[in-house]
Image 1 (tube, protein in one colour):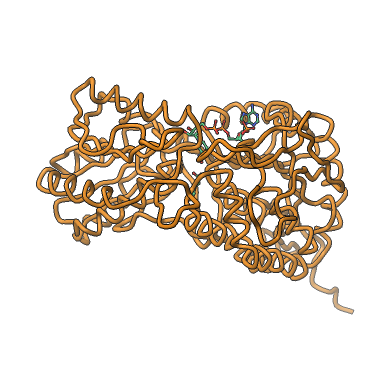
Image 2: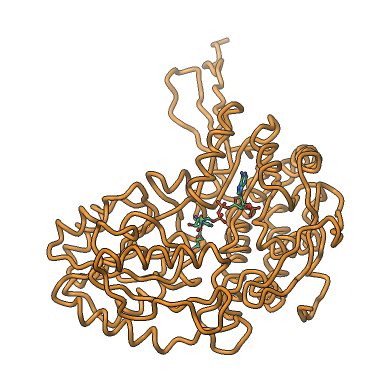
Length: 490
Ligand SMILES: NC(=O)C1=CN([C@@H]2O[C@H](COP(=O)(O)OP(=O)(O)OC[C@H]3O[C@@H](n4cnc5c(N)ncnc54)[C@H](OP(=O)(O)O)[C@@H]3O)[C@@H](O)[C@H]2O)C=CC1
Ligand SMILES: O=C(O)CCCC(=O)O
């Protein structure tokens, strides 16, 4: 059993509107630890009826919530943030147990996740409208921002906390309600958030966490006329399917989907900084992040030196159970994730790539995999076009800026991109030329609550975080005020 300071945070139950439904081993879904395969607990296997209940409760609760002042909503969110930080150790332990990332990284995710609640607690009071110079002397044009209403959210396993708070923070700040379906592999982090939300004073019914059949819950969320917006983070394939399912009811959509991030190292880069950046951009969460570098382009003059430094750095980073001290690489989420990494390595080496570091399942067994570097990688290999979502760094060689920009943009995706250079003019040129929603320049870590996170092309719709993130949960309403004539002379 997972040891926690506050064991009530590991609740084997789902929150459906105003009631908790407990799981039983007979009918529930088992949740296991990817490092050991051991059972953590059960969550209920819910479907259509519970989703309808949750949506109906959200509808009722949202109307009262929207009437509260932004300050009151912000104060409750602030309490939620405080509780997350007070319980950071326990939340981190739950996250490591179900997701596998090292405990230090998991606790970092809790702080990162909480920062969205803190940010939007503050932003709630800044949902300003405006007054526009009117088109006629007797008219006034006023624009208000109002909450969109009931929001449905579907989230992935790779960031079991932060991908929820990045949606829930702006939703609740704006005055919306949220019905959430977390990933089946990592539901306990979501449930712990709901326990703390209740303690923080979030009104009953405003936040539901539904565990169970993704297909049934998703179908009800997307077809409901009460739900006004769907916000989803996950694979492009499921995102596209949900997009289509939302068409008949014309919902707003927020989609954070796959990426195929280029990471470009120019000859003039600070090579040690580029290696540090690549470790973060490529190997954060063991490569299982949609903003992870997927293609590393290194200019010819520094190619060999970069490969050597990267390999030396990787060799120093311990692999193991996320609960062990000092571990940097935990297990991958499941066997399918390992198979995808192996497929990409096999495809690349069959076409001429060389394994410079790693390349094998780790001696620990299970889903542990050695962080891997491939050299002599070319655009004909699968790693050039498909997201690996694992600890595989393929190094492509390039000669000119024009060539590398064309290669970097030659993808259906457009989420994150990165480059390293010390040339100021190139910084602007390349930053503007990369066809991506986000560009990291001389940094491998771009994510923060203050900045707009999101992609272009098949990487999705909308932005999360930043002041723009609140707008995604609000509708603009235009009031046209007529009859404002000058007083008639008496
Ligand atoms: N952009 C990103 O951040 C992420 C990208 N991915 C990419 O996707 C690949 C597959 O990962 P995977 O976890 O399967 O991602 P999915 O897109 O399948 O899962 C993400 C979420 O969608 C839910 N879901 C799955 N099928 C449906 C459905 N028919 N209707 C409604 N909801 C659904 C999942 O539920 P359930 O868990 O119950 O199946 C989960 O909550 C990864 O290897 C990676 O390449 C994955 C995760 C995050
Ligand atoms: O893979 C994802 O969708 C999570 C992105 C993590 C981050 O915010 O950097």
